[in-house]
Image (tube, rainbow, N blue to C red; front, side, top):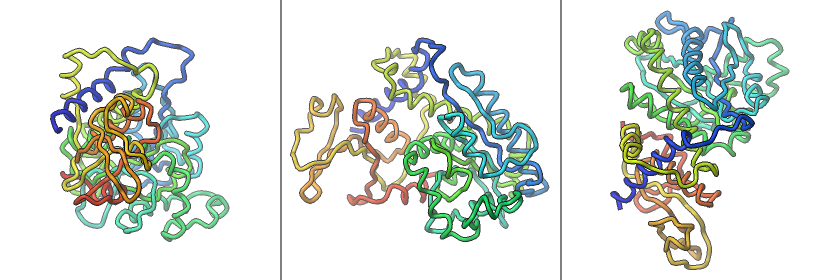
Length: 374
């Protein structure tokens, strides 16, 4: 089973990585629009750990990410800011909505009172544990620097968790895609730059809540850490981080190409298979098994490929009076996301990822919040 899954992962990665090169250019086709948001700016310096200035670092990194992406045909980059100005939080998400963006990526640096370090990527959500709330509070408190913030953010207090709950509603529809995007960015930085993995987590960031597309916030590292701060501030660190964020975005774009009509039946060569193996990224969650749920019903169906749109290795399990049908079984979250995308491309548009531990279904959000094996 593991061999078959590994082979399928290679196939999926190959399709994702190379399908864009087989698409015939169409000048009338809508470009893939990426909105890049450099956090803070102007009178909001962000954190100044070790004397490094967050607003300057994230602007530089953001512009470098954009420069990389702008060289790729079919991609259009829009910036919330390109200079040292303060863009109000309530305006950043709507900028992405106005240009009908495909993704929204906000770049920041972290800080703490001790020598904490590592890279973290966030999606919009309520952090009931409180572990991620401090990060969200720090990024949200820029509100107090804005003019007329009492009117613009009526009823919202960055320091009160209960006022954050309503912010999750607009992003729920895009949560799976946001997690996929966040996971690809996170794994690229962690695996290729050997940074500490603080995992993909959810937290209530105002800047993410009003964007109507997959949206993530990247914390590049802790400026307050005596080793990580100088790295993030350095020319080398900024360049490397920008490259890996851009690579994560490009991998996401290629992955979702699996769901387009242009991605049907790509021609695969051995060279492409070898290249896919080299760039594959793993995100392993020990003692957890991920599966893609395809369907559920009272009818018992033989798990043959012809009953499931050609998908092989479908499993059937009974839960009460219902039979549920699952595709894939792995502890690798990157792999299961690709399997889900492949299932959706085959016609299971409502397929979604579920998690099991010790044979019992557990909440996917809780598993992801706990993080993967470093």
